Image (cartoon, rainbow, N blue to C red):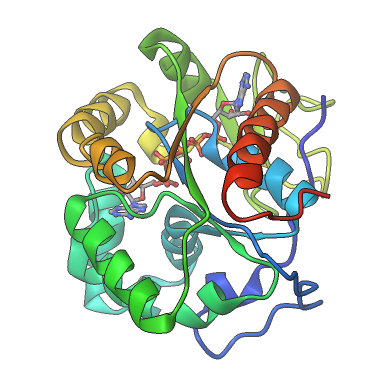
Length: 259
Ligand code: AP5
């Protein structure tokens, strides 16, 4: 199994004035999904696979913060410097900073190809703000895919993760190893271990997930949007499972295109 190349998501990563190239092909019924679940369950991996199948763009708040972290400290706003400090410790970035980032990029929510929100919303406040924005913009969520996995497997996925410094492709030392140790298969960039994948930060992130993020399961269940997806097996198996569960739901509601 090899890592998948990332599509060009310039607009989401670089802010409101950036353009994606090429622009995604508009769909009659674009998928507007939230990928939900604990840190390391495989949301980013699934986002790439679902992007290839559905054409919808992966919009990851964590990716935006990491991209900002590659800039010189003097180029960062005080709010972004503060955000990166929270992130390194494994804590959540304050809602106001996250919300500013998403609101600035609301054009991406209108993308004709649809969207896959990865890592947002993460608190009840963020979920309520998102709901208000979508209502105002006349957009409807298709579903919330909630990925579920036993804690021991999550910790193993996180501690073995390696990410490319250049193209951000994700590997795993055991489950998805690069062909050459420490080198990205796709662009030849160096692989590194994220600061927040160290044991202490993983412990903090799991605690934060339980206290602040897990309550969103009920929020979306009450709205009839939640699809619980077991995240065991290979990434391809999980993707197939997600699509089957979405198809089943879509035929009874919206009639989206899966191909
Ligand atoms: P973010 O980047 O969103 O991280 P996360 O939610 O903690 O999720 P991860 O990226 O760690 O994991 P993932 O589920 O995407 O798993 P992956 O596919 O990589 O956020 C980071 C930080 O930013 C937060 O802690 C916070 O500080 C801040 N932040 C971001 N958004 C925020 C918000 N909305 N509010 C406040 N703060 C926010 O897979 C993990 C590993 O497992 C990889 O090595 C992969 O190769 C491997 N793997 C994947 N699938 C499988 C499989 N099926 N079998 C075996 N291995 C697999």
